[in-house]
Image (cartoon, rainbow, N blue to C red; front, side, top):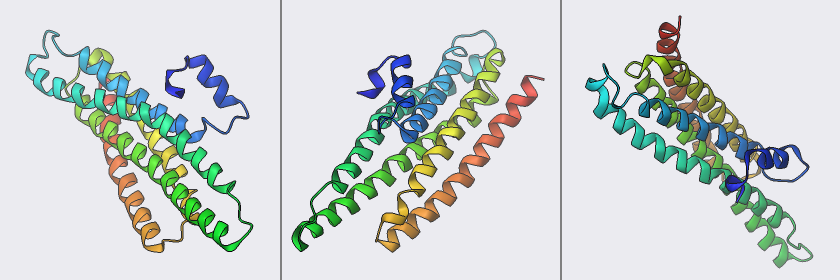
Length: 208
């Protein structure tokens, strides 16, 4: 599994001519790092003097950020698997009408999965941004900058994941599905942008 590699080994693979990991895996990893930073900030707030009033909130945020971290790390490998499915479908024979039909169906299925995996990663990155907005105003101010870094990483992960959704949509013949997905992307980016702005506005006031 990619996510079990050492950081240096993963980066070497990313820089190589291997088909995976690629941008989708890197995007999910960015989101996972954002989630980890939210968990760190929560842990450095829980039990600290002066933050007793937000301890229940911080424990709730911690539970959600740890879950998002786990989901996004899994999606690093899911993205590679989805890409490999596309490659496998493209290599299927098409010497006759039957083979061509099987190949077309496999390609449609694989391109749809190749769009859905990064979309799910983008949704998770948006949830990390929501947590950043939630935790920013109540966390230990000594680690406020880490909330900002978490938000920036999650935003990068979201934007990058959406690029990987969009590149696959033109290959899909289900026009209704494609239109629905594009509407979801527009809503997601707007909502995530609001959370990012809220988090960074609070952080900027705390670190002046």
